Image (cartoon, rainbow, N blue to C red; front, side, top):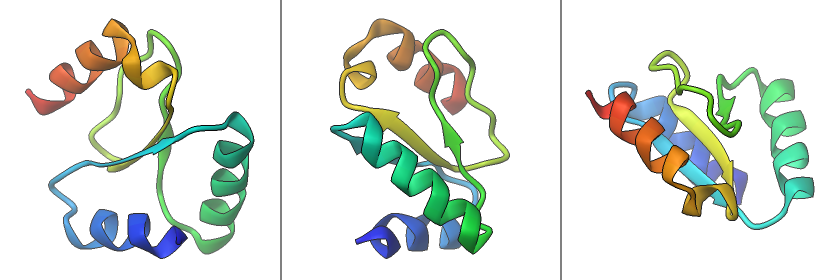
Length: 78
């Protein structure tokens, strides 16, 4: 299951791959696995800007509904 998110982020380096996860515990699991595999990623934290360097973005389902998330995506796209 993890490879479904990793492959596009590694192949499409000029685009963002967003992985919306329903539970914070899943985010922790993904972080551990991605770190162990050396795959660059970032986790969206409320109110924080997204960087264009790490194109695999993990976000919790509740945060993906917030205006701050939509604003961060808009800023990243520009």
